Length: 206
Image 1 (cartoon, rainbow, N blue to C red):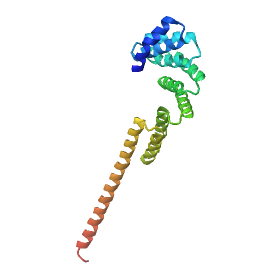
Image 2: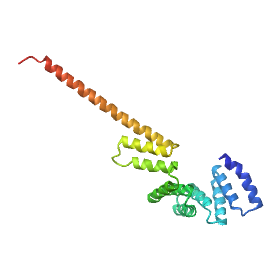
Image 3: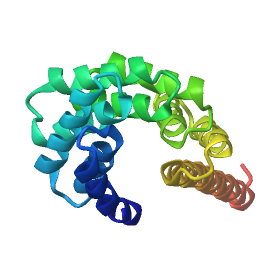
Image 4: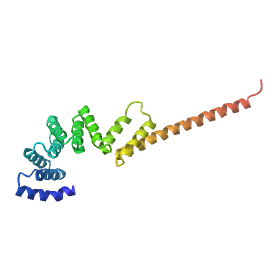
C-alpha cells in the first residue's frame, strides 16, 4: 500500500504530461483501490483498457473491483478475468484473479482450472498449494494421519501458508486425541481384566 501511495503522485504527473499513458492510469487505479476509492479506481482501469484492450493488468484489476462494485454482474467480471488469462497465461496473477472471481460467483470448475494453471506456472504458489492440499485432505475417508501427511507436504512446498500450518496443527491434535482415547481404552480393559482375575482368586473353592 505504501508503494501505491508513493507511485500515485508520479502517475498523476505522467497523466498530466501524457494523458494516453496506460501505465499511469493502471498505477493510479491500483493506488486508488488500496485507498478505498473504488469507483475512481474502476474509472482509471477502464481508461487503461480503452488505451490497450489487451493489457492484462487493468483487466484483472477491473475484474476484482467488480466483485465489490457489481457483485450481481458476474458475466462482466468473468469476461475481464478471461481476457486477463488469455493475454497473460504465464502469469500467476491473472489465474489468481480468475480463481477469485470464479469462486465468488460459484463457478467451481473454472476455479479448479485456475488452481491447476497456477500450479503449472508456479508449483510453490501459496494460494494454489493451500487450496489443492485442503481439497485433497477434505475428501471423504481421509484419516487424520493422512491429512497430516498432506498438510506437511503442502507446507514443504508453500512454507508461508498460515492456513496449512493451522490445518496441520488440527490434524495432529486429532491424531493425539485418538491416541489418548485408545490409551484410555487399553487402561480400562486392563483394569477390568485385573478385577476379574482378582474376583476369581477370591472366589471359594467349589
